[in-house]
Amino acid sequence: MLENIRFSNPDTLAKPPGYSNVVEVIGPGRTVYFAGQFGIDKSGKMGANAREQMEIAFENVKAALASVGAGQHHNRRATASASRRFIRGRSNRDITAKMTSALSLCSPCPASGVKRT
Image (cartoon, rainbow, N blue to C red; front, side, top):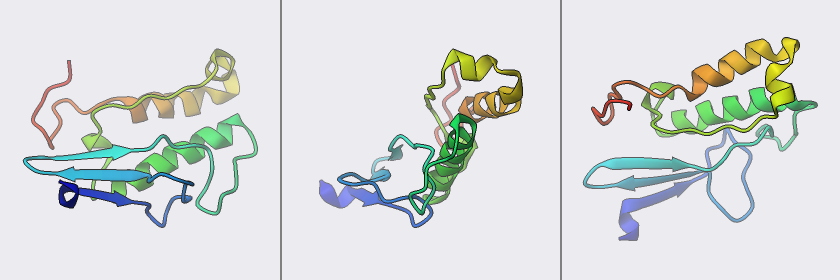
C-alpha cells in the first residue's frame, strides 16, 4: 500500500517540521494532497504584513502544484482564510481579486473530466 504513496517537500518551499507539503497517491487514478501554506518563504522568512504573507502563501501553492507537474487549473478544492477587514481594505483589493481567482476551481477539470458543481 505505501508503495502507491509518495511524500515530498519540494525545494521551493520551506520544510515543515513533522509533516510533508505534498502527498501523492497513485492508482487507479492520481490524487495529490497539499498541506496548508503559510506566508513563509522557502528560507523560513515570514512576510512583513498580512498582504505580503497572502502573496507568499499563494506563490507557495503554485510551487507545490508545479512540484507534481500541475497548475492552478488542476486544482479541485482550496480554502483560504483572511479577515473581513483585510478583504474589504481598499489597498488590498488587488490581492483579494488574486485570491478569488486562485481559488476558482477548473470547470471542467482536465485531470478528472468532472465538472464543477
